[in-house]
Image (cartoon, rainbow, N blue to C red; front, side):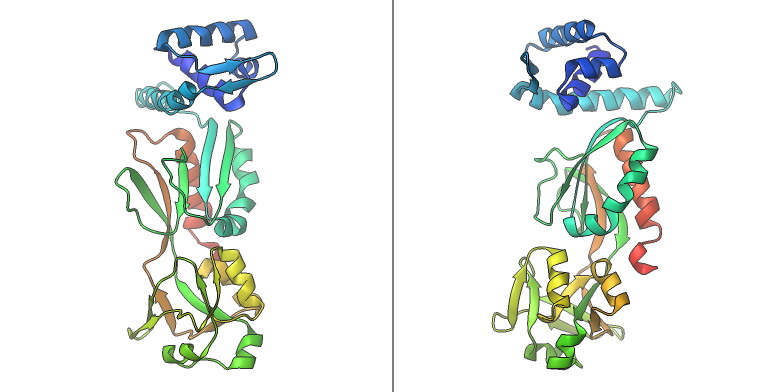
Length: 301
């Protein structure tokens, strides 16, 4: 199978424009169309729907696309291993991450990343709602939990520590807890998926942190909203340290039980499908995030 034709198909599927894909690869529109037609004849399926107004990818094209990308990745890696140039970072990266973390730490870095990688474009999904990496056809995702799927691989980006926080106004009204047992007398905020957590002190003592219905005034499924609710004085809530670093610095939030933290073995992981080859485009994004975030996490500075 002609890898040049595969590369043209992948580019056309990403751009939904055969002429533009051909120009990117130095092909005249008529040549590009003829080459795609030959590829479709070879595989026995129409990969792209053409009309006078637009190009769209067919169901068969959607199914064929990830395999075409993998063949190209294998070819580029093999040629690079033989010394025939360096695998270039080009194409579209489908990247998913928590919206809260992405707003604070990823989005501000995107102009620099794209400026250094002109051959790349980003297709981003920023959401705190759980998602399936493989089903969504993502190239890379940022998760805050360890792997539970054998079809995935991961690289740790940074350690995360869970802390309890409340606003100065709330603590002035309701008092400051002196021990974990005092939390039973306070209004608590919780994440929708949160069960009973373990608190551990700097001396190694352990206690349970739960959010019973009578104390849990607000249940939230978004980290930024949880931070805003705590700043507004609605109660005491658990947060990842990266989520509240600025609020703790400017005094809009205060640590509650500062000698204790939530022990849930949370960390930030860069997760990607387990294939034989880590593509150049995914590798360059992983290396960039590790350099800019993982090497010296901004929330610890």
